[in-house]
Amino acid sequence: MIQEFKDFINKGNVFETAVGLIMALAFAPVVQGLVDNIIMPIVARIFGKPDFSDIRISLGGSYDITDENGVVVGQGPAYIEIGTWITTVIAFVILAFVIFLLVKAYNRANPPAEEEAGPTEVELLTEIRDGLRARA
Image (cartoon, rainbow, N blue to C red; front, side, top):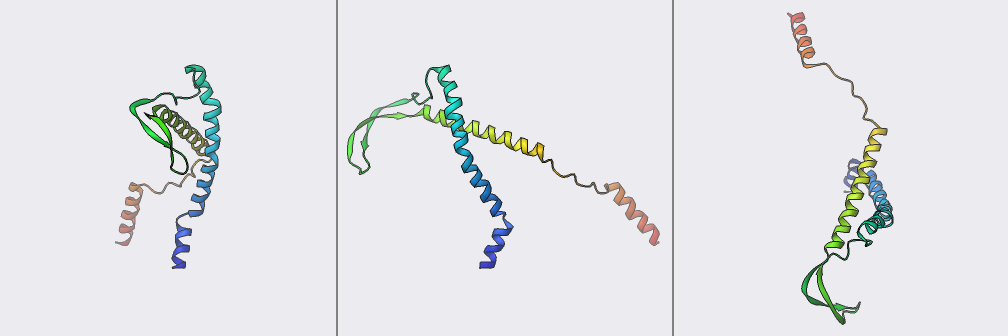
């Protein structure tokens, strides 16, 4: 079982995947900082608010607000927080675009290795024909 685990680790490129995941987790605050400190102030300038959190759909009721011990401390209005979701989608799109640009830059800096072109189908068939003629 230990050998199978070693084979799994070595075969699946688990180490490279782990490094990629750690880098992605470290990169997330950078993108969040970009969204919070650069993009959203531009949104605030255009729309007059720092984000879209004020966009809500009221459900017309209320719900219990509880503290950390589960004790009800008051009532709050029930909303669907569309604006918060829009802000999150904007952050996701920005993150996806930044990753796209990084992958594009990486691919440009590290072009795939040119594989030697093997013989064409016609060349192979000609070689087989010539080999058969030489036998006969």
